[in-house]
Length: 254
Length: 196
Image 1: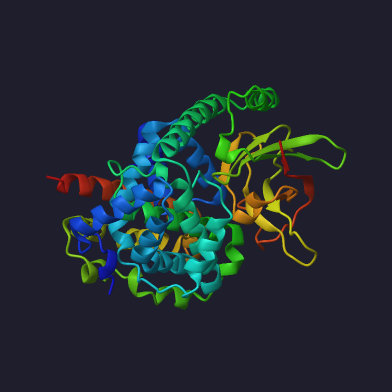
Image 2: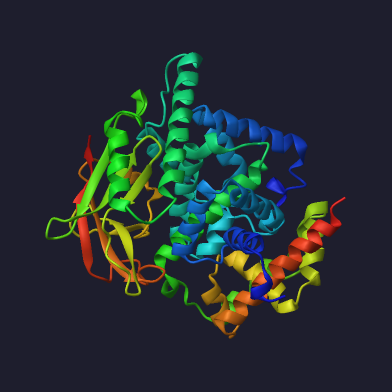
């Protein structure tokens, strides 16, 4: 049983197992998750491995979280506007169908974007055009979509961020991210006040668009500052930016 | 001790109740999220704590986990995943994300600490579950090369990367990768052979 004798299906199944097991580094996790979005067979393989390994999870010793955890979750929920809380069941159903249709379009956009690494600038402009043309419309309950263009110090746009506040999902489209030379771009949420620490939002892929679920504080305010620094493979070893900041920008409503 | 949401002990009724709650969460019912929280918080906190090994980090991630559940509940498909696997996967993924974001340095604790985890040990499964699936997994893990079985458990419970695993076992990275990959292929073969 050597590497050379494995088929691409077997390799894909091993990758699925590695994702389910959790041995991949941050960049590999992102790549595998993107593949799940555009490769249903691979996604099914990952699901199967999660179920296969799930009995191991039962052996983890449960632990009681602090009593105030639920109250903290409730506070965050109150600030979120995922979908209408009031209204008839019919309204909710309509909102759900609208969300589904939008998800379908986003999914096909993703499959399309995932096809190749060339012409990315054109692809990201096309993505913005879809948004601008109203094909990918924010629903009524989620009209605050935030966007940011992260630019270099010289004012060159490097990355476009479109944040759907309803789901907290950010779509990140690289326009002209710098080449690797062994380093990877990492996205940071800058502190609102002096003295706070930047918070890592995850690693980016310089070649491909990707989606991230952002923490609440990022999704909640227009004006939040984002920055990209170049970090060692696997991300900043300290949890704070260690490399040069190559791009920055602010979230704003559209 | 883990009886609350054990895959077998939870029973069909418990599983169905959790599925119903998740579907209500998908429709925007916050009280249903509270029900999910009450039933699963201890299990999911256990998972976060085990992977992050830091209470404060685990608490932060646990909050993110329930907000993610709230946001993603409409992606839960009871026909494809069991509710507890779906929930545990979110907890594992969020905790592993945070662990990767914090970087390996945050977790450079002495090796002997890492060895003293009861749930890494091969018998942990046997102590807890008598269900068919758990029995099959336990048996099949037992047929692997001992180092492979240990590494797979350590990876699952601790959220360790190949690199961390190889350092911990004092084994070259490539050797650790092929050990685990061979182990996973063999594990799958063993589990499939046991299916009726």
